[in-house]
Image (spheres, rainbow, N blue to C red):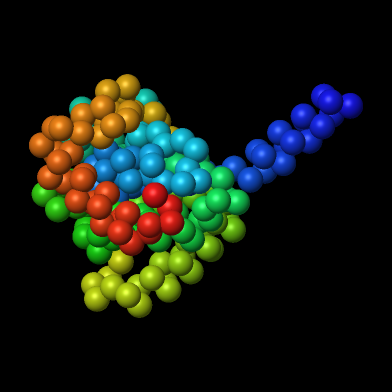
Length: 188
């Protein structure tokens, strides 16, 4: 009986777990924003949206793969739902910039959301249509079915947490964190 109860609890817990892949500039920024977000279980930096299998950071940043720097966000939808994840994402980056975020320039820095299902695609497109009302410039976020997510090299994982005193972290990531936390205090 205990085994059956444990199995039922595991099934219920896992049915509340969702994943979404987001790219909005350097993956260190998106990773840092979501690592401390209430309801987010795991954040992995990686590459997606391109055409090369097992890309390296060097290949991605040279523009040889068409991949974007992205983060796979695993979250508990009973704590934070997809709308809230996307709201945070749209404060953490500027979705109106084409192939860049600030001084980070290149196609691998594009705004992109990679979905798993038709239902997610419809939800995301409706979200963007609604969100467009609050932006003066056109939102250019690419919305695409996730083909494959490739985990980035180990030194990219937990980057802000492990390197918070680095200049990029202090001058680029930290202001984004402050902005997101001030806009969403219930999630931090």
